[in-house]
Amino acid sequence: MHDMSSISPASDIRIHALQTGTVAIKELQSNGRGRDKSSLLRVFAARRWTEPLPILAWLIEHPEGLIVVDTGETSRVSEPGYLPRWHPYYRVALREWVTREDEIGPQLRRLGFSPDDVRWVVLTHFHTDHAGSLAHFPNSEILSSKVDFEYSRGMRGRARGFLPQHWPQWFSPTLVEPGRRPFGPFPASTALTAAGDVHLLPTPGHTPGHLSVALEAGDTVFFFAGDVSYTEQLMLQGVVDGVTPDPAAARATLGRVRQLVTDRPTVYLPTHDPAAVARLTQRQVVTASSVRQQA
Ligand SMILES: [Zn+2]
Image 1: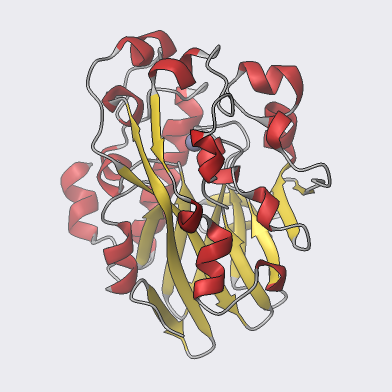
Image 2: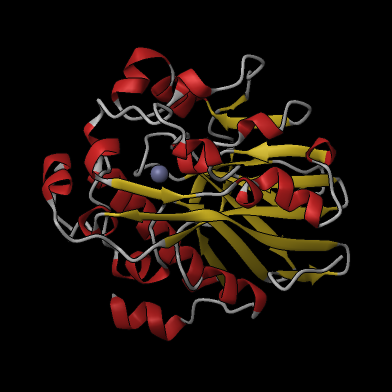
């Protein structure tokens, strides 16, 4: 079954966009205004909210198996006590709307799949809107960066706003360390597939071990960016977000992405970009002129 939010970039591959609800954040979180130092307190105090933004996850039908990039959010966020209100981020800086039917499990079933059919789940990072629905995947191999797993677990992870207390009991991800092969401007990629067409790329900044996923289909790269930036525009402008613990690393990652989209036709797919699904289905690559204009 082929939904309206999918594209087949090669005869044996199909990519589906799955919207697992919406989120609103403070505008200063999405656009840190390029300051040298991020300020969480400034984000918390800000008045202006973004419009409701999509929480996207991605399904890749690949000859070697189904690949899911991020699980999206869980409808449990509306249960009292699920989100820790003692944490200022959840108290003042995040609003989410997720129904049970928005969750990735029901969405996969509507497409004719079972979550049990998914071979690999790649987590870009552990923020709840990316890792909130792990519970749907007890029989898949789940991959995350070693750096972000350590950064997000335990009491220190909870203090940083992660929710390891909600990870399933069985959760034991395959930990990815920076690979040995360069992929374009990225020095340390790891191939996920034996065919070598799906790459896990360290893209530190938003979190220290943030991973992006690049799928090569012919000349074109489909770049699943997680929260490397909230929109394509912010990536082109090189504007870091307002919550990064390391603005210099975030800026270096944005520079590498800009180099990639200059070197190769690239469809750029961040998790929260309202234009991402249309770019996917129209196979709309970043144009060289838009890179030059912003540089
Ligand atoms: Zn995030």
